[in-house]
Structures are given as C-alpha cells and as structure tokens.
Image (cartoon, rainbow, N blue to C red; front, side):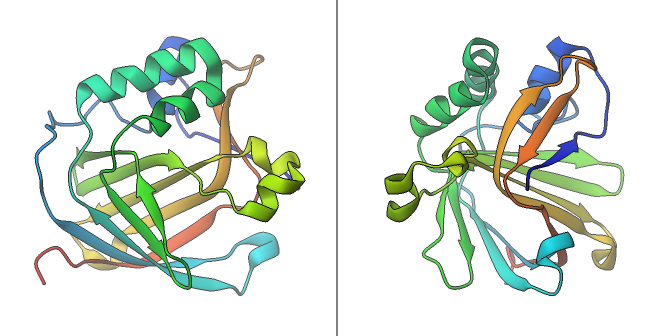
Length: 198
C-alpha cells in the first residue's frame, strides 16, 4: 500500500524543488574531491515491516557539486520524478550503499549539511531494479528512486536516520508541498556509527 510521507517543512514550490534533491539551504560549499567516509546503521522496520531489521553501510568517496544539484533541480522542474531518474542515471558514482545480503548499489547524489548539533548526510539515487520486477513491469517500476538521510549528532546516541528504499517525488497540488510517495514504508535508521576514522 502506498504511503505518502510529507517532507516536514512547508515552502513555496520554487523552494521545494530544491528540497527534491534532498539538499538543505544551509549546506556548505562542496567540491567533487576524493574523500573516504563510512557510516553504518541498523534499519528497523515500521508498520507492515515491524520486527524486521537489516544493516546498512554507506561508503562515500566524494560529495556532489552545486552544478550537479542544479542539474537535478532543472530535471525535476521539466519532468518530475522521471526527470530526476534520468539525470541521476548520467551522474558518476559518489560511493555505495550496501545492505545486508545484497551487492548494494551506487550513490548518484550526496550532500553533507552542517547543523547546530552535527551534520546531515542526504542521498538520492536510482533504485536497483531486479530482472523479475522489470519483466513484470508493474506499479513498483514507477518508484525507481531511493533516498536516505543520516542526522549525525555530536552525541552519538542521538543520531537518527531514515531510508526510503522505493519512492518517487511529486508536488501536492493542494498544498504546494513536495511529497515522497513510497512503495514501501520507510525504514528507521538507528545505532548509527561513523567508521570514517577506524
């Protein structure tokens, strides 16, 4: 069953389009320089997935540039979620998301945003489509994006996050809010560890 999760802040449509790329306005200038950051988290199921869990490892090799951010904004303005998918397809990998029991998949777009209590990492990428899913070509094919946010707090036990494994983004015509429409329920990320310095 679809679940619509409204992004928390209400903006005008123009500002919301920036949010589609999962980038906040407080993001520091970032360049496409090689780095090495590794984060681990435990994904906990909610609602129909309650009681299920798996581990997620996020390997970041570089952050996205302001130019890439603009490409995604333009793509969303022109063609919505489908435009985002096509633009992300052309971007080179910035790292990988590895989920227990899978080979993982590339990260197409990632930003780090400083906060008063630490920083956020926001990721938007194309979701891997399995052969069987593509063969059936069902409703799930419309939900071809994955999004992830880590809210890293200076007090490690307060760090949280969320994973949207299969989603698409739309503008709600009534409220002018951007909504992430999920094919599955979001997964709560907890027990987040920064392994970058290990």
